[in-house]
Image (cartoon, rainbow, N blue to C red; front, top):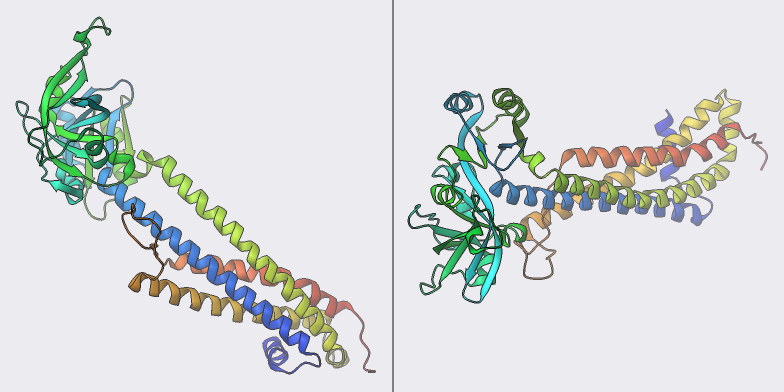
Length: 405
């Protein structure tokens, strides 16, 4: 019954065109605000998914590192238990240390990471090789896979066979760090260049684990940590708890999210801040709706008086105009959602809106449509509509009206 009255008031002609104009302006404002919210949230989802993909190719599902110090050892019993842990597909030992890479007059600081033969199974670095091949060499003949930024800094290029690359690593047994004995050095060559993301490209280079252990005077059982790939469908949190019980308090077990917690937290905060800012558009639309409903109440004074004479109580009158507000918001909200969905689908298929610049991995704005975003925006529109319609509907219910013109 309430909806029938509201629908009739929505469709019927008003005595003043201003009422119709304000009503449709409120509908349009809600549609624009709804569409803007969903489109922006979808773009944030796209960027977040892209960044997670990039970081997922570089970071493992789960990583075990020392709780204190830089290096740790794994016993045979621990390795057997890790292998038997449900959800663990593959793991790889690694050792990393800051080093200096020198090529003639050029030099740069590098985080050199020595990895074993299973490293390809725990990440997707090989898919990001831009030039050359994935070859980490041997302890006697080490090969480097360097980031593009490092390659540009010192001229490390797999096609340049005349480069004289020398890697310098700290001598852990040195007693005087001001002398030449403070560093170990070794001639290396470049086998490949990777491009993942600038943060990694300017920082990391990879070589084989045996070479790193030799240069750092480590035992064959000493590592910087262990990276683990999980089986499809395995839950990171469950595997993390199981591994933490196996390893004990001397080890730190982190999921992929915890390895990059600050980044993902900032991305979520940015998303919610933008959501809050764009919700202001809906608040502006709410003021239009208040104006439209207030003028509609004045327009329908006789109708209200007739309904009260027929026995309608104040709550019935209030629900009629509340429903009218929800109808205005519903038309605008559904239209905005439909518009946003069409725009997002077109962007996904045709990449209509491009990113400026040429240094990005992709040249268009990424979009990912999530159903929860539509539910969140629908709830926001509903809340704004109820708040906006409450004042004029309450006024319509409690004010006395006369049947006289």
